[in-house]
Image (cartoon, rainbow, N blue to C red; front, top):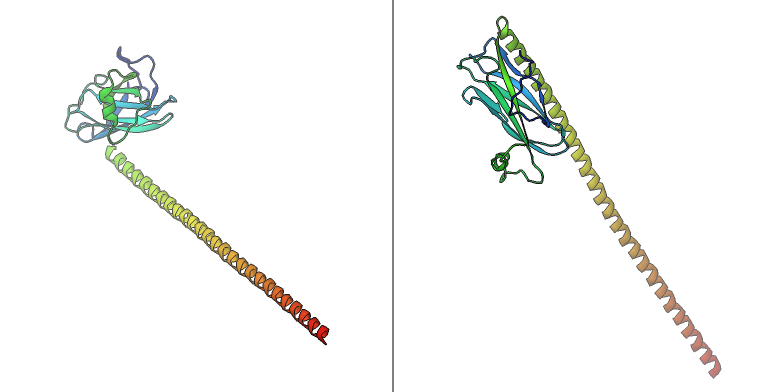
Length: 235
């Protein structure tokens, strides 16, 4: 029964969100009813528009939804954890359900002042609704072993993610240092060019001074020649 899809009159004929699993969700564990049991619902926006989603359940005492509201960009997806609470009677399969709603965001800006919850308060009717019915199965046997294996896998994944994060951080640091060096080189080049220009101006000034000196020398020579000629005439 876990993969049987059950529809309801309130479900929309056209539903733009892809839900995985497509049929019923199954809470299955040897600790079902005694410990938290979690299943994951993958929600994907299959449209080219930004959509806001909301997920509700038939009993807030029995279930918890981690990320009950959110916004999905075109093509984006999110993993939503659905939790069955311990200490509750395990109900019959197919009686309880999660309801998934969506609405178009349009040009509305979602921020700290205007949250997704605020947006939903203004929505009179959702653009689409789909009920996801719930099945329950209490298993026996090596549930604890599976739990330990799952924890071990989660630890490995966490370590792997941490390593990846560290690598990314190092890579970013290297890139930042490269950019800093580039900027430093640019500044150095600018300073070098400034110094070169200063030197060029100095040289130009020297050349001008030399030219002036030569002019003065020629004037003096010419003056001397004229004086000499005058003296010769007198004699």
